[in-house]
Length: 114
Length: 110
Image (cartoon, rainbow over all chains, first blue to last red):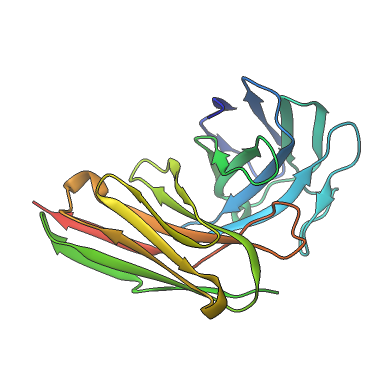
């Protein structure tokens, strides 16, 4: 399966600041996604990162808060903007290599907001 | 949207025991996947199983799509099996997007 590198692995940020998370894959993939996992909870899909176009956001998530880029088939970024303590979560990127293939996840970014 | 419920929510077992985890979903799906999240937070794909039965070592999974459930079997549990097990489904025409279940937290005691 693809090797997925996610950076940073963890960070502690101040309220009101923004952080950009990077997701790099060692091979071209068809689909890339961003998920959020709040403390003690399951995973929730934030958006689908579309190559060369605007991301597709799920209900409850907006571009102004979570801008996403995907300039090519191996790289994507998620920015968490104007952070508040409620944004403290693990953020994970995932990839799918092709239709009917399993989804694989990066190791996640553990974010704490003070 | 589609609902995905897992049971039991928590399970504590002695090393060497067997266990069965269940995943129920509320609508037809394109595929179902099982994941293990280890205590360090890493999420590992165990099975891609839209229907039928698959086995991988001590783990096996069965999905009965017509009855909207899946089972994950763990035999001869080891302490390294501890963590949270999630099932996730892609609804029909879902474009590979996954809806995750509520999770089962498994603790294996030496």
